[in-house]
Image (cartoon, rainbow, N blue to C red):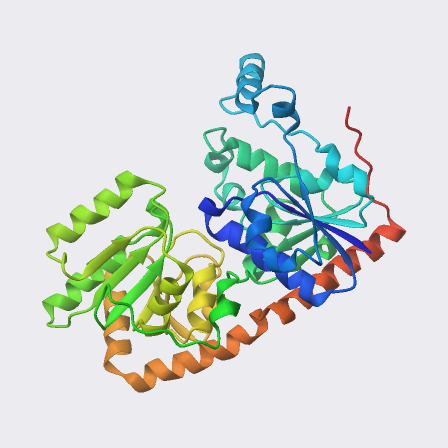
Length: 401
């Protein structure tokens, strides 16, 4: 059996890139005797997976347009002129995938390389927010390339992998995919979790206890403000709690708005904004936090919830998507924009070590299913099932000029 995995994300993107690192490592661990090829576009990926260099074949994907001296952006603008779309998606078959006679090829939406691989294709889809949003979500706009690429990938893949029951329901309802073709695999964690699982790091020096921790891109839908407002409510009651935020500054203007909010509420000494941090710093912040607050309005689930459970951090999550399903009985849930409920939950956690320890214990039990060897075996079983189905009903061969 020969497996291909197309890794198109880049480190600055954050969670999706970490997903690729985890999935490739977990798949290799679960299937050591299977030939595994990793197709990549960013040279940092084989470096970050250096521990697999003896057991994985890394193949660089070359942009066909760029190799002919053309710019994808120029081609898109040309097509836009003829078709009148604000953002025409340029989708080109990468012939490199056809050279290796794969049995199954894995890809992650919105990238569609796997459907051109002349074998059974397995597409991992994070969310169908653009379909759930109704006609407004379907309108052409700045994110049009993601929407149409994802739709093309879904309609032309043999198996779709989603991360939660909500994702599965959405796939059946909005994409009209056959039920047998949709599989659930929980969103995994970043590889650094396995690296530091058994290690206790010293407390971070940038903040004093107690504090809450939230690693996320600085983007409006990440909803940092609700935590800041909750800290202000607690301060008015005489409860001092700090917060540490870290992540790529994807939207500088949004981060600046948060800084202004902190100043308006007089929380400058309690709120710390960081950019990208080293893995060891992130682990230390998790391990010594009073709680991890997941306030993102984008789901269905999110990696940091699993990471917090792995490192023994109580989880408080908003009620968006399937995050209540993800947390289960291992944490507390609050309405996404309700700082009063969040403040109440935070006060309970920091005021009751027994309650915090109970959630920590439950979280570690839930995380057991996300260990690389367990997750990897489940994923490998899906790929084997897809290959078996393909023997009976062969995948359509794509023609590429």
